[in-house]
Image 1: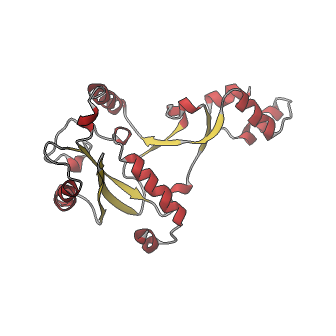
Image 2: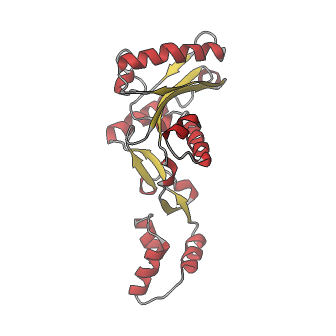
Image 3: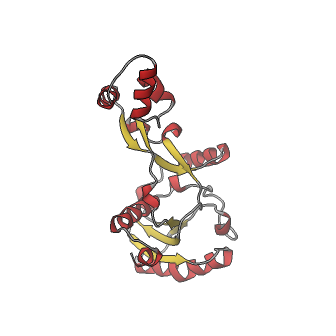
Length: 222
């Protein structure tokens, strides 16, 4: 009964399982619940947050990944990755836990869908390549195509020069509307799962949370 409930509803808590079993006539402790799930290879983990995707997005992501699956490493080293992110003042406190096996972390049942630009306090644009990180720019106000062009002119090109990427480098951003006023359409929209910049963004947010800024001024300083 425990395994069936957790398989169908991974966000079930130990207390939920204790209550369900009690209604069925069996009294067990939370420790017994944990031991049972552990014996079956499950442990309580933070639910991964993933973009809220439509089937068309999923297919576009899969096609892009397959098309570039065998790209040589030297080609990937030429790529300058960029994206925006929102830093919430208390953004890392809203985690949810699920029961899952390690290999199932991105099973849709075990993730929390997120919206690309929903919520948050400070918006940042950043870039990085295999040679290191580029400039970090705070976006103030509503970003449109003109502002995005200005950000690239003032931050992307200086970053390329500072990292000594040389000739033949590739700029990679997603197919977000503001990015594509004059941009390639190959890179699919809503694709942070394809962009490795999400890893340094995550590291940045973890380190900010450790500093525990108490207001926007503190957050901006950190």
